[in-house]
Length: 91
Image (cartoon, rainbow, N blue to C red; front, side, top):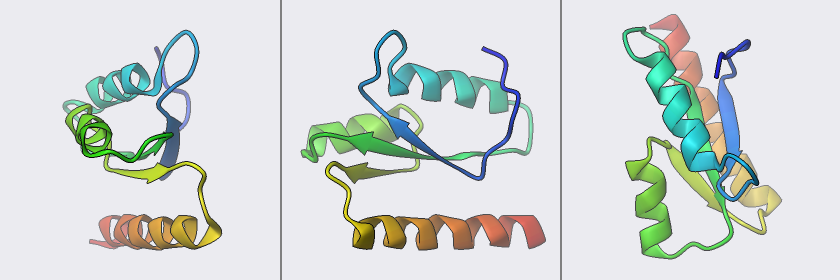
């Protein structure tokens, strides 16, 4: 899979048809190897049990949001990762 665009933050649904979010994340991480680029990937998961969260992190995702997503949780995660993204650009 060739990536045409670089996004600061990707919200990745883990349960997509054909290629699930874990497979997409693996491919994106493989494409980053050898470069200084790192895209923040936030998993969108239906369950928030410990094994699901651990699976997200072991597959290369940076964080997760459990569904249904509230505006407050979305705001927190965007603030957390957009601030880090800005630091990486200037530092």
